[in-house]
Length: 380
Image (cartoon, rainbow, N blue to C red; front, top):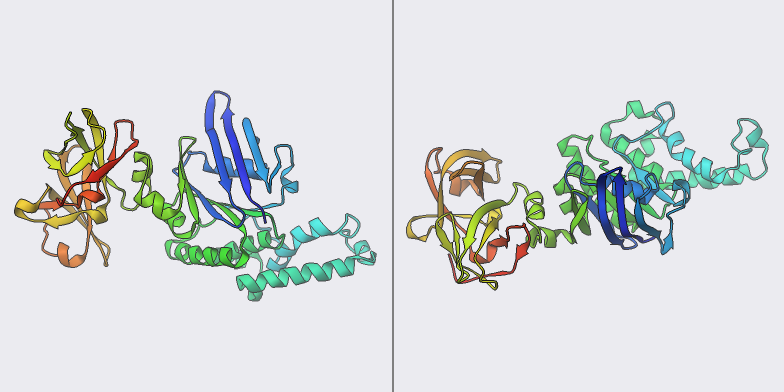
């Protein structure tokens, strides 16, 4: 296994910049997820690591060695694709054994009939078969070895694609949205299986997805990318609770963070939607701000205690949680409150709903979308 480093990596197609000065250290054995919306550059980053794309500038290191000029086949990396990329005419066993035969057998040993006469072939094939059997046991696909991909479910095909990568015992696994073709319930199941597999193999996993739920649930660290920039890198809890950029705050979390317009006066007092909020800023400059608050941090209030109010336009009942969508008088934005069914039971469409939050749950962003240091003062 190996660590992987990107230093000053950029990529451009003509005048169109795709990656902007990406610097990234991925530790040996780490599960790192590149997450972001479509077109943010995450798959391009993965392909540059694999050697399938060439960066415009910058360096790629694998296990401390620079690999800019190293062919993909020599980088000792295994890639798992969204499309599975299995050979449809071969059985599962043949799909698993093929990459090892290509790697370990000579050209003569791979020749039909004649290759069987080569003295070392039998010993090599015995080792190869043992490796395939070991991987099949880990992934619990032994009963599938004689089937062809067309006879497998989506989840079974995904396991086989993982197995074909695993048999090579690569320096790292590169996964490009491998679960996106599965239905919702199977994706949840496969997330748990991938996490368990990572713990068992103790291998380096680099995982690309646009699904922030996958990033939050499986990763040691996540790298949030947008418009070719690496916006934030850190453990999932840290990125969720302490986003440094408003784009990260809105992208990570479902439903997404509520963003409200606000103004700070010369005394550092903040006014948001006509209400003064009890948050202190170190910088007491008059400026336009944005206040971020997670749906689960908003609470229903009544009377004088309330900070804000809006008209209930939609109730989204998910069983264990109810999302209340409120019209707060902004043309392009509603506020979403995440609450439990008991609290939401009495709320009716068209009702005026009062709500607020603890001051230490407010996140403050400047006019450029960068996080500002703020501290809550008392209770709201």
